[in-house]
Image 1 (spheres, one colour):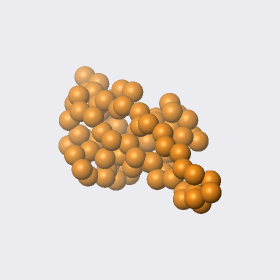
Image 2 (cartoon, helix red, strand yellow):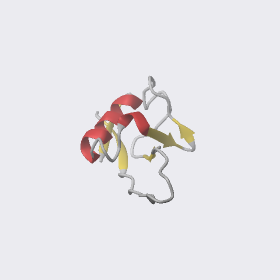
Image 3 (tube, helix red, strand yellow):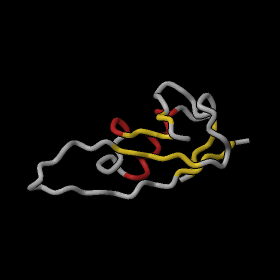
Length: 85
């Protein structure tokens, strides 16, 4: 998935939700991590010094399931950052 600078963190979450599915990657449960730092909503990728051609990590916090239900995992989408210029 390709994301262009300057995108707001919450916009990136919405793009991921649209591409991967609301049931799999709900924007409200996503955490975007760059160089070990969780990026805050209300900030732009550029503000967080996310460099062009870099990759970010997407984590989804899921509600806890009982041991009887088991757990499910899903692979994170690859997100690459590019400059629109």
